[in-house]
Length: 251
Image (cartoon, rainbow, N blue to C red; front, side, top):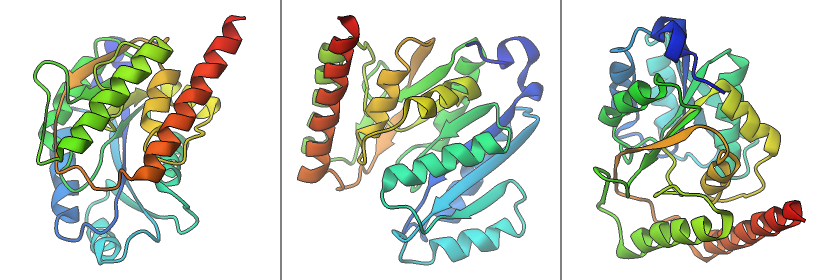
């Protein structure tokens, strides 16, 4: 797999931005505009922002984005009440982007936990021929702020354990700020995403380990408090499942 921009330039690339959103009425419109502003500095053939919303949203985020959609043609609000977990929201966004013919798919979290000003580095790096560019809080230049010590330890510990068991080598295996080529994302979906919690970001990176991948530094702030015992249990059980599968494939 080789990024199309490495030979054809950004004007040959159709960009899709996947962003599940919920309960972000204070920042949703500002965030969409900030992301699109960063993307507009690159001459993409087309750009589409897919905002995925479902029943987890209990405030005016959906109404505000639908209002913005009437004047911002690049924004597409996807209402998906069938979603049962956060993974369903991301997968719905992935499929919307692929079905729309996007060549590159940027995944970013709303609410400014991911910083739009980090976006250009993803595009610049991808254009040199990578299949996936992963944002990293723990590589040189990366940082994580306004987050609990427990959350930082879980992210670092999960990365260390995953690398030890799976033979991966990324410095941040749990980040959700990433850029995929179309072929890479199709591969991810073909492999299937078994986790129903935040471990799915790690699962994706494991399934991309044989591709041409790289990390770029990001600033991550104000991590949510959604990492509970159920999420941790899901992470351990799915990591163990993938480790056993790896061992079986060796025999």
